[in-house]
Image (cartoon, rainbow, N blue to C red; front, top):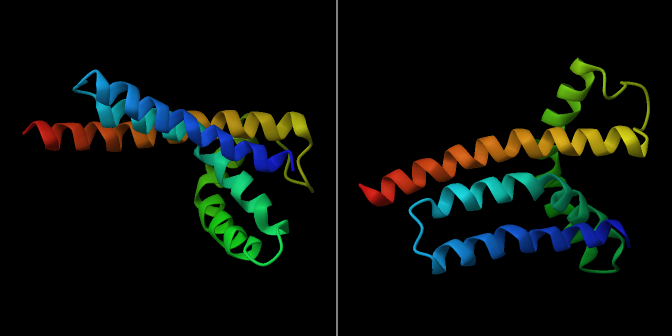
Length: 124
């Protein structure tokens, strides 16, 4: 159940979008992309945890697997390369937190660049 609370992190990019949209910001998609990148890995992990719900949970679990697979490995491999994670077995909580921090940094840069490209496209 605690992992399902990770889905509440999805409120952050939505709130960021509406905040910057109301301000008529020229960097709407860039800031929204950065906020989305910071939370996409824990949110996808939380969606994966919904597979325990009877009937519709398997559908949520499938969506969670599809989202978790590409969003989880960059932080894990960065953690391995700098010594913050080990390669044997399940990661303990301390290492998992560092993997998620590295995922947040990585995906916020990626989604920030995508948002920047969208902002430039809308301006031009």
